[in-house]
Amino acid sequence: MYFDSHCHLDHIDLENFAADFDRLLAEIAAEGVTRMLCIGVDLDSFESMYARVLPYEQIYCTVGVHPDYLDVREPTVDELCNLAGRDGVVAIGETGLDYFHQSGDLEWQRQRFVTHIEAARRCGKPLVVHTRDAREDTLDLLRRHGAEEVGGVLHCFTEDWEMARAAIELDFYISISGIVTFNQAENVREMARQVPLERLLIETDAPWLSPAPFRGKPNFPGRVPLVAAKLAEIRAESLEQIAAATYHNANRLFRLES
Image 1 (spheres, one colour):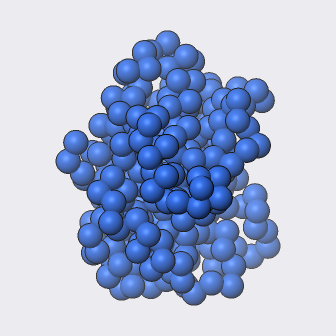
Image 2 (image 1 turned 135 degrees about the vertical axis):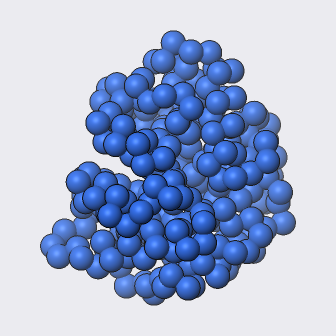
């Protein structure tokens, strides 16, 4: 069994699945993926995303506003906590910092991140964190605002082992995406070799970041076993070990029954 710990089911083009959401889910299940976390990226799209996934017991979701999104409604702690109290909403995010896609005065981004951290602490839900080219500020804000009280995951992680280790010390998990299969991603593979098995998650970030040999094509959660297989190869562990550990880890982080 596999748990795709980060995907965007509401962004997948269903034309590739006979315009049928149930057909998409059937193809995912055929690959052994039995649980998924669908990630919220802004408040205005949350209701439609939530309505789409709520009927399915194998899909959980999050609520948050992505750090890259400009000109969107800013979240408040109260609103995030209210939405996080709904059935099936298991985490706060996607939140974090991105200094690769954004530049200039990014205080708005840091304040948005702090709002999510404070909401997570108030409602007792873990954080789903996006971080890119913002190592020092990401760790600093997590530390200063008590994120270790709830923990979380650094998703689609591509930074080095030193940052991963610092996050693990704050009770965070490290999630590896299809990037680990890319030829030029030796830095990601080197980091992924060092993450303790009990702190490792896998994800697709679908519909983006298809793993090899499907790189450049639309992604879907049914490809998360390819991420697991690459991790098994580079870590000299069995595929069964990786699948079982990451499945258990995701259930533990998101406080779900196995």
